[in-house]
Length: 471
Image (cartoon, rainbow, N blue to C red; front, side, top):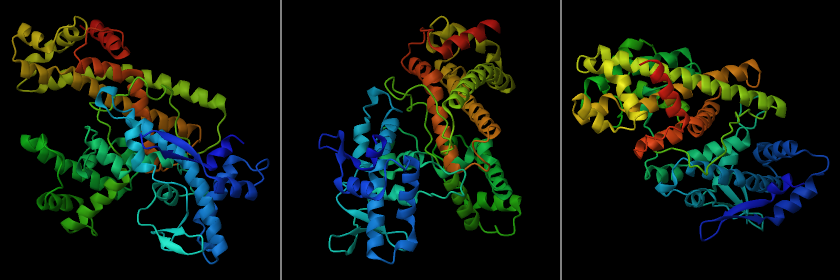
């Protein structure tokens, strides 16, 4: 019974910005009158409520429409708790010094007072309020809770669908008002063109052959032109030019894509599929008082025993450490090889490990190391940047861990292919936050605050161990 109270308790915001639960008596009465709570499981109730709210065949009678409104009211209460949780997770991506609290995000998404029944019109666009005398009035301001429920796909045929809980988190994260607000605090929201410029291998595999070809040609032309122009390279990614689009069209040689605007629209469509807010390491370090360090893969509501959950988590934890330790050495060696091939910086390749040891093991600053080896400070910061090293190790570790998790859940038949893009978005963010908590957050904070003489964090200890063995 305690779990079922979530269907009639609606989270709202006080004037001071804090949240509280308000009991919606109309929702409680209707739910208890409609369901034998000793016979119905929460999962069955949830699915039934969704089926009623989204069943367009019930739109011919007023009584049916009122039933839809009441089922929607229960669902609005149900997801309001997850909206609050999502806001907490969003805010936890910032350190306490940045001044972003989850209470500041709540007013953007907790706009539902629970006083009226809401349904969606037959065109599936407009929210309609059902009045006491049975009339339907268009809502001037759409409720976020109703938007979430209406956009959720509840098909039993869709084996890779997100749960309503995970869908609520995703929609809250993508809420435009929240995205715009967090952008003021440095939260990175990349353009479509930047997103398409760095599609990961596992994301590429979810696209059609033609879409993969488009992405590969786009990256070939777009990256080349950005590399050739240092000013462009330092600026925000802009839409491809007509000349670039035409070159891509010539390389693609696809009959249906012959005009620049056609290709541009196709690129936008693919980007929309892949869209996710990219969490920049500079501004997304987890607060020490944020979420727990355990990672739970979003399973799409596939029933799974607690014992198997623990086995999966332990395996993921082992994979994280393996990926991290492997990539420490791989990224260091790749950086040295790049320096060796560079005309400008090849002389410094042999000093790379020495500089890192001086920075991490002896606590020297980059400026002091630069003087010691006889190089300008700005050049030393560019060549030997500990921050860039950490970001690259983090990126490779997250990518490898995601691939390991996808392989694991396929082997255990927890999900079928192809993977839904929303699922990949949620999984990626979950893994990023988990890896930051376990390894990267503390190390990055030390770099940015110049407290690099503390060896207690795992990243620094592992790096020093590798450098000592390979110097």
